[in-house]
Length: 309
Ligand code: SF4
Ligand code: SF4
Image (cartoon, rainbow, N blue to C red; front, side, top):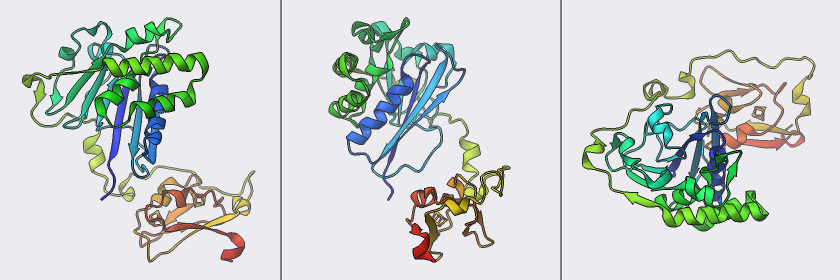
């Protein structure tokens, strides 16, 4: 059975450090022993104060999903004003038994503003804004509230230890700046508390998920609607296959025709034959090895050109 992929979605505003925190979490997961880690930022209007999201995935095995997170196990809310503004579907797709970790400035009654939750979901809060201000984590008047949320994440989920979180932070922030970040995360870890969710706040059934119906139509890569992608041809770059040192080859007997190699080839030089097997255009394949790294069966191998000939 494949290892579970833990999916986290972060919601904050531009300038609060949300994207950086999502990245630190991925590094912390790596320190914790998760070998597959991934972080993806998602910007809307690129200015301070605008809603931003970021995604962190981690697993004991390589992570092969490369999309936004639609059905999170954990949602981290750096800016709770997003609940009231309606500018982000914060609890969208939260899994049953999912975890919501919320910055709760002034320890106000944020929980009542969340709306419906899937049955079994847990809610944890911490006043990350006050902690940021206490340790001087501010830039141009905006509190970097996302950093303390890393401590809250560690406490609420138990998936990543505080030690791994601090180790990841130390990799990124050095000197006095690093000290402040570490202390803020430690304090947030201490002050994170769980809230009892009233029975009436639970939803019967699962949370709505944007795009679920559309995605479910696709069973394999081949079901995707074809989109125009340029094919390489001889031009200013010449015959790019001549650059190649290693050549990708695969065993047809072992191939499961998943077409991950076709999907991820950055040069678009993999096509599909009539039986659904990949065909590599060696005239333009650069030997980058992406196809070999994404092949789930480890069936695409890179061989030296001379050895293979
Ligand atoms: S080695 Fe790179 S360019 Fe060649 S087929 Fe694989 S992914 Fe495409
Ligand atoms: S990724 Fe591997 S298993 Fe999938 S089609 Fe390509 S060679 Fe075959």
